[in-house]
Image 1 (cartoon, rainbow, N blue to C red):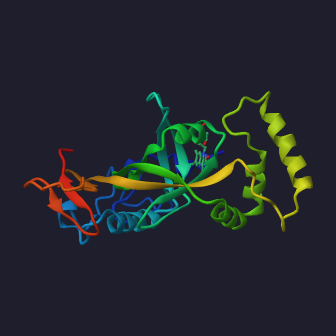
Image 2: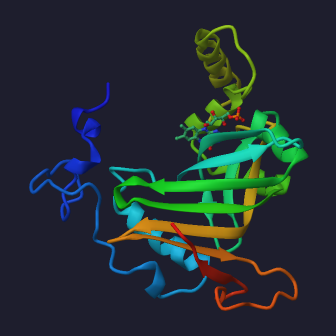
Image 3: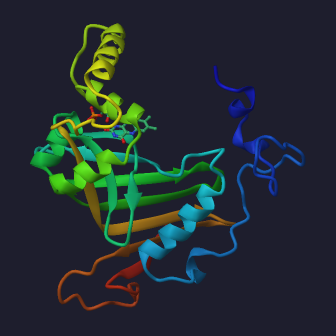
Length: 245
Ligand SMILES: Cc1cc2nc3c(=O)[nH]c(=O)nc-3n(C[C@H](O)[C@H](O)[C@H](O)COP(=O)(O)O)c2cc1C
């Protein structure tokens, strides 16, 4: 059962004390401790802004897991689907995640590598939307990343025929027991249908409410594009634009 405190609405999160364990001075709907507006960001590239926001979200890790994001994919004919994912890591070039090639999203990414991801850090009322294309990481990298995971997680990955129908949840428990007998903690091989993927962004859009709603879009300019007065030169190959929220 969920802890009772976990069920409190965000309007009961205090402005200064951001932990559910201390509920004194409750009043604000969201945390308005943001020190800067999107217009006066110290960086003009999406990676460094994302890193700053991520760090701030991480400090609230007993409220949210800042690595959870929604991943949208679609078929070749444009039928969309979306699901939450735990992002494995991110850097200047991409946002990495793991999933099964044989899953619905795995198949969709194979026929259409364009995807979008959205983080929502509720206590801050901030979202970051990323658009780009997904690349599959080489098997050797996937093996290395799989090896770093806990035994529990490795066994779980061996139990999943993700996105397939199953007779009942009981089957999954039985499967788990079998896999534990099959693999000892020192040597669990990566399931052949499990891969690591990288979403390489071409657009990253930040949205937040400070006193007012604010939205800024970073994008890679098209080749030879001449910037007009609504498009600003950013850093590290990006341009940016303020958007109607
Ligand atoms: C918090 C959370 C984290 C998740 N992380 C992953 C993940 O890292 N990889 C994954 O394949 N599915 C993950 N899932 C499961 C997906 O939401 C989804 O059910 C699954 O990937 C099957 O999606 P598909 O049938 O659209 O391919 C996660 C679900 C939740 C709620």
